[in-house]
Image (tube, rainbow, N blue to C red; front, side, top):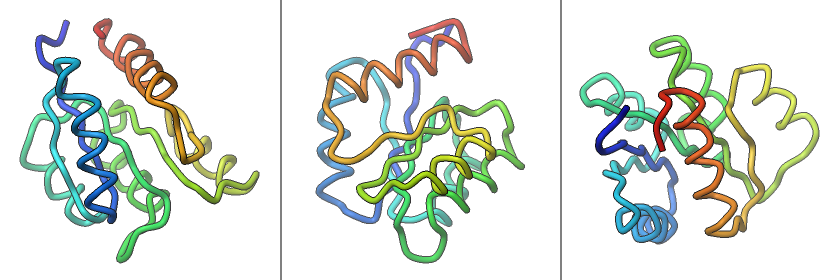
Length: 127
């Protein structure tokens, strides 16, 4: 059981990262922020992260590329891919790369927090 789950919010939009921080911190989560995939990978190497939220369209590495690299380093780490421009190919590739879930932006607070709780419960037996 995780006492305080850590969520890594990875998005090149600072306002979106802050919005997600304001959603999850009052729920008891510790939030870490990354502006791109390279920064996310650096954080995963240095800190205890329990779940990664990834935007699909970012500079340097896409969310999908970052997801694949995260899974090489920490295979069990649940990752949720978010994108405003989802198509069947992105969804299929994300699921093949072992994304826990793929969500379309804009995503509702209820849907996002529900999927995060489900991922933590399934992975660690905690919410």
